[in-house]
Length: 249
Ligand code: PGA
Image 1 (cartoon, helix red, strand yellow):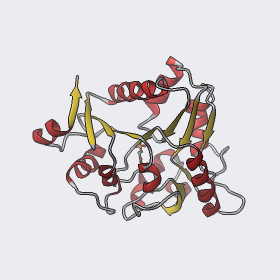
Image 2 (cartoon, helix red, strand yellow; image 1 turned 45 degrees about the horizontal axis):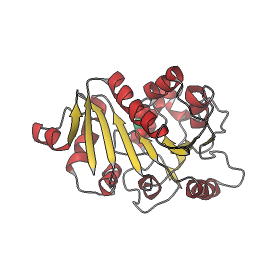
Image 3 (cartoon, protein in one colour; image 1 turned 90 degrees about the horizontal axis):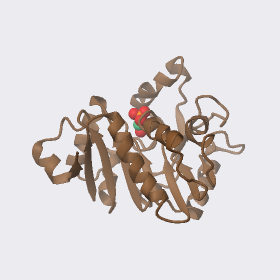
């Protein structure tokens, strides 16, 4: 079931999402958080850095990693997470798929599924791609897949090229949690801001689950909260806003 929470802007998205995550952290003695990279969660991680909630009992598992990048590479997702969050707070354990596995990406995926098995996710944070991807599950990705090696689409390479000097430097493959792995989380929290995400949010609300629009798989999950700002919600009509909105302040 999808619940929509409307925020005024990106800052408010971060605040609302942080509150939901903090509540989860404080709800029990042993918590596993599923985390995401990208620009959307940056404000949330900033709040973690300033508010410093207790995290010694929190294990984290990240969604994905570029294939071919060592965790020490400045553009790797492991490096991003270390810089934005893990270097600042004492987590119990932190996991990110190994993008430079000595055997293969497929082996890294297999090992990551074993890690996910041992650490069922209580709350999974997600962004959404302009093309509707979640993690690196691009349009057409199977809803039945566990962690896997995937090719990045042109749309994703273009969107992510802003982090690299040139587009040619963007890795073309990644190790990603699959849709089936993501849906195993007890709760899911998706955040989206800005006009660029409006079409994906509209499709997520309007389409029945279809592999051509990966985020629609979330409609098969019992507990999904979507926090969006007005721009990302700008293509939804009044009826849709009312139907899906849990609160708006
Ligand atoms: P973004 O990426 O947060 O950088 O917009 C989200 C995504 O592609 O999943």
